[in-house]
Length: 221
Image 1 (tube, rainbow, N blue to C red):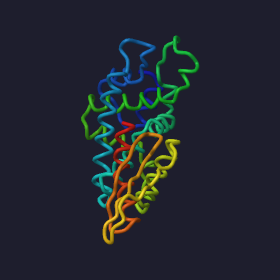
Image 2: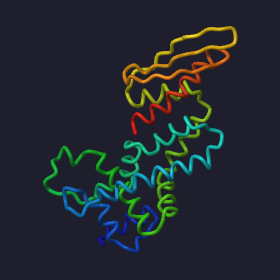
Image 3: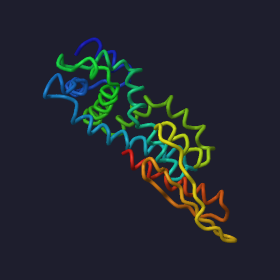
């Protein structure tokens, strides 16, 4: 175990009993057949469950659609790579010489390594410990989510699409009765659509936006 690995354990506030797990988690497939791909697979599942559990317990007023959006933001490749950068995984990751400079710079490599580390913690200890480490690492990102709680579904949808560089949705009024409105929300670029019903046009639009948010999350998973 190198000095850098010891420093990394201090950063994540976890010391491995079986150091081989951490070594494997930090070994890219270009370096060895004994690499972090299987641990990455496991870590991805652990992170999704850990974040889902945290959101359920701490955002009690949010519905499924909003929770799905928050989880999507927290477990996104961009967020995980950002956390990996703060941990300086680049200096710890063992990468083969065959990997080109262009591939070496891909931030996804380091986000993948972070997933592998969480998978390694799960195997070395248990789910609760792995979840605790991950939630601690995501604290800055979690704190920034609190401002989203007051935003309506149309705003959340707009921000989600802007973040993914997708054109804004189109809302079409399909039914206009005295006490019943139906609106179709379409994300034409992704060929996604959803309908919403309400007592007025605004309420129907909000519901349509809420319904399509869940479809959007599933689309990118």
